[in-house]
Amino acid sequence: MSWSGAEDLFLSTSLASYLDKKLLVLLRDGRKLLGILRSFDQFANAVLEGACERVIVGDLYCDISLGLYVIRGENVVLIGELDLERDELPPHMISVSPAEIRKAQKAERDATDLKGSMRKRMEFLDLE
Amino acid sequence: MLFFSYFKELVGKEVTVELKNDLAIRGILHSVDQYLNIKLENTRVVDQDKYPHMLSVRNCFIRGSVVRYVQLPPDGVDIDILHDATRREARGG
Image 1 (cartoon, rainbow over the protein chains, first blue to last red):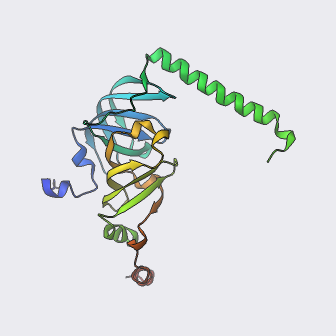
Image 2: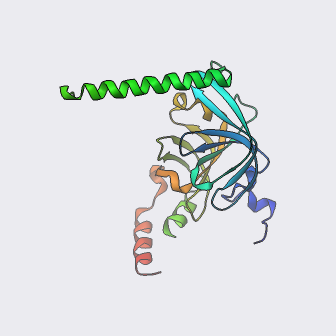
Image 3: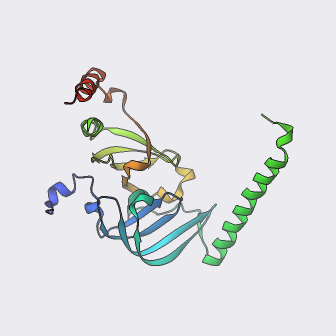
C-alpha cells in the first residue's frame, strides 16, 4: 500500500487528515473519549494518545485521564475534530472531581432504576 | 457499489445523517468511502442541547455501520437515473 499525497489526503474519507489532532471519539455504549489521534486503519481502529473519558451528568462533567488507548473500530460511532477556537462545552457546565462525577452518575442511575421499578409496579393499571 | 457511486454524486451538498443512537448531524458531505463511512464538514447537531459534548465539533468522520438514515436535499436525487442504474446493477453490470 502506498501513501497518498497530501492533496488526496484531504479529499478522502480516511482518518489521515485527523492524525496528530485532538479528537472526540463517540463509542457505541455512549462513552466520549478525547485524545490525540496517532494511528488508525480501515476498520477505524484508532490509537489515542493522552486519552481521557469525558463523563457528563446533567450540567456536571469530569475528564478522567486514561493514558494511551487502542480503540477497536467496531465500537466507534463518530470521530469529531475539536475546533480549538470554540468552547468544548457550554459555559454553564461545571467541572467536578472524579469522585463527585461517580456520585452523580450513581444518583442518576438510581433515579432511572426507581422510575423503571415504579413503572413495573403500576403496569396493572394499563395506562396509555 | 451503487450507493457508493450515488453518495459520491452528493459530495458538497448538505445532508442530515441520523445515527443508530438517535444523534442527528447536519453538515456538508465531504466524502464517502466503500464502507459508506461519511465525512461531514461544517457540522451541527440537530438537538444541540441534548449533546453538549458536540459543541466544538465542526468536522467529523462517521462510521458507516452506525448510520440509520441519510436525509438528502430534495433535488439530491434524479430518480430516473437511479432507477436505470439499479436495473443495470441487478442485471450484473
